[in-house]
Length: 298
Image 1 (cartoon, helix red, strand yellow):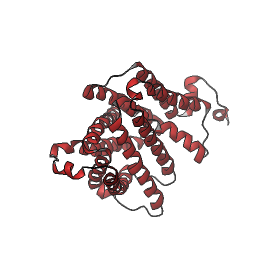
Image 2 (tube, rainbow, N blue to C red; image 1 turned 135 degrees about the vertical axis):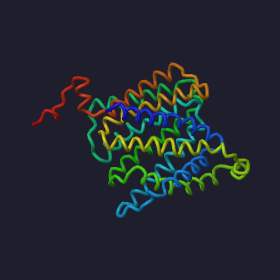
Image 3 (spheres, rainbow, N blue to C red; image 1 turned 45 degrees about the horizontal axis):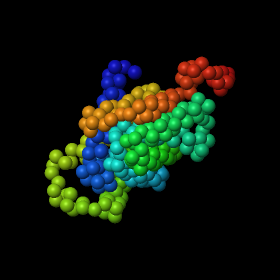
Image 4 (cartoon, rainbow, N blue to C red; image 1 turned 45 degrees about the vertical axis):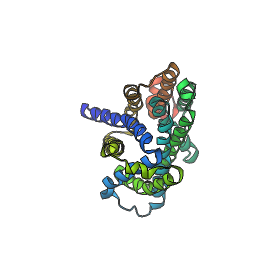
């Protein structure tokens, strides 16, 4: 990967890392469901030019849009709202990678090599260690919300393999269209004080909504899609694992988060396991000097 593309990867990681800060502030100010609905409303306005039907694939597309927009994002921002620090939330969201590998094995009958099974176990072990951090332990409900968000992301990832690549912006347009009214309805049911919030709303309060929509979705995913068009998934995906580390640093800088040793050790285990799950098996066998007869067949 050339230096320019590495810089783009760093920008995407920064955009996603700071999204945890903007999401935390926005969810605290607006309430999680209302904030998420505003986020998608703003994203929908941006993505309207890409809102085009997908003949023959509308049902799976709408299913994925609901799981991601309504399920994944609402649970993630609820977790951010209730979390004791940014690091534990940012690291836990990455469990969608091993969740995806497990679901692909179950639903798509994909084989998981022993190396990756150990990597998946290591990733989940890290989350268990993180759970015993005193700050995290007092906010375990937030971790469970984010675990649910990661699982729904994994389900959506597997389902997306069943219809052709439609482009990141087209997919996000449909996610925003489905999520905006659904989340607004859920906010009216489960949250309160929306009218008072709107009456006292100042223009500056919307920076978190704008950033989450533009910074994370348009810039972050736009760069990811650009890089995936030029490099393999196995090359690009490991580079994107920098986002949780940057989110943790931003959390220390912005909120004064404290990182205990359990969080550091658990985070290292989880991110190390996820990195190994993300790397192609050919690279893993070379890395560990393990021979797999599948790669020696003529």
